[in-house]
Length: 198
Image (cartoon, rainbow, N blue to C red):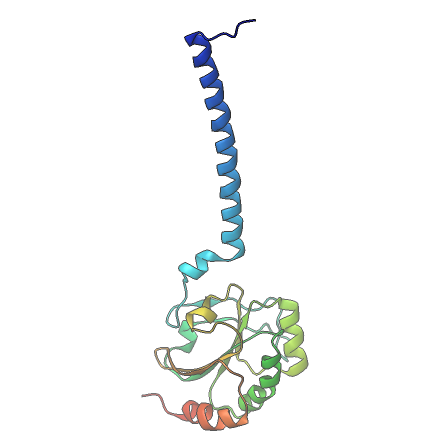
């Protein structure tokens, strides 16, 4: 039996081949787009390239369900809360061993009432943050949930802990990405918190 080699047959074959290749291409493109979208969301690429926060412009919500000793909700905070005064900003997480080690020093510092201390709870499940502060004490006047680590990264901290003396503006006047201890607090933190705003 002789194969059909007419121009009409060749055109029909080319048309079917084009449809099949087009369909495969669309499926491949769709799958590729889905993978890229998944990785983009999982790795939080938008935040990496377009961080909406800076020390002069941020707003952190409270940790859901976090209560103070009187049973009142502990608020979150924003850049407006830091403006016009000195304060200490501490980036922490319940799962961080160094944060647990430094926490007792922060609690002791809070009792001296030198300046307000704000907590930035970075990428921490609310239940664990609440347990941590209930067990070890809450030295913070407000605790903001930094679920996507926007503020943490805006401050230049690549992990936890991170501590920042904030001056009027607000501006970062001093920082460390290591745990606080008595020596660092007495030499670096306390004198800056005592300084009067210009």
